[in-house]
Amino acid sequence: MLDLFQCLTSTPFVHGNFTMRDIDRISGVLQSGSYFRNWPQDDILELASLCEWVRFDADTVMARAGSQATALFLIVNGHVELSYKDGDNKDGVIDLFGDGQLVGECALAPEACYAVSIKTLDTTTAIRIDGAAFSTFLAAHFDRALTMMSVVTERLCQMLRQAEELKCRSAAQRLGIYLLADAVPVDDVHETPLTIEKSALARKIGMTSETFSRALKKLSEQGVSQYANGNIIRISNAEVLAEWCGLSSSEVREGQSDGFKNSV
Image (cartoon, rainbow, N blue to C red; front, top):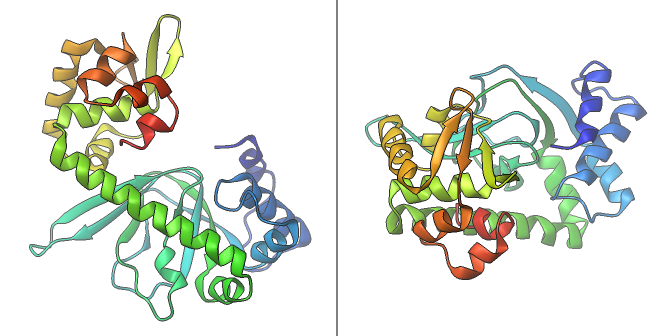
C-alpha cells in the first residue's frame, strides 16, 4: 500500500517482544494508514506498544467465527476474506480486504466473539492489535474512541451499500462498477489490474465464478476487454460504462475517486 511497508522485510518479524525500533516501525505504518493518520504522535506510540507483527501463509484462518475475539488486525500486505457459514453449513463471503484495511473490530467489545471468520487469500503481513488492551486505551482517550466509532460506522454503511447493490443492480453492472473503482488512465483508455484471483473477486461482489464469467462477457458489449492472460481489464470508455452501470452523473464526474468506490 505504501512505500513505508517495504521496510517490513528489512528485519525479522518479532512476536510479542519488541525493541524500540519495532515500536517505531509499527507507529510509522499506523500513522501512514487512514485509520490513525490524524492521531497525536504520543497516542500512536502508545498504540504501537500494544501491537505485534504477524505473518500468515495463504489459506490460513486468522480468526474463526464464534471464537473469542482477542485481537484486531491491520492488513499491511496481502488479502483476507471475511466469511460465514449459513444454515446448511455452506460458506458465504461477506467481503474481501487488502492493504491498509482493519478487520476484527469485535475484539473491542468485552468478552465478544468474532462475528465472521477471517482467512488469508495469499501470504499476508499484518499488525495485530491486542483487543483488551486497545479497549482500555480507548476508554482513556475519548477522542480516539470517537475515531474508532467512526470506523465501525463507516464499515456498517459500506455493508449496507453493498446490500443495496446486490438488490438493485445486475451482476454485470456490479462488476463494471468494481472495475471502474480501480481503473487508471492509460493513453486514451482505462485499465484495471486484477490483484486477486477471479474466483475470489466473484465472491467479493456476490456471485459465483460462472456468473462472473457471464458478467465479464456481457461487459465486452460495453467496451471491456481482457489482456495479460486476463490479469488486466481494459475499459475503452469509462464514462459510457459508468452510465450503463447506473451510476449518477455526480459519480461519473468524480471519476476514479470515491464516487465509484462508494458504489462497490
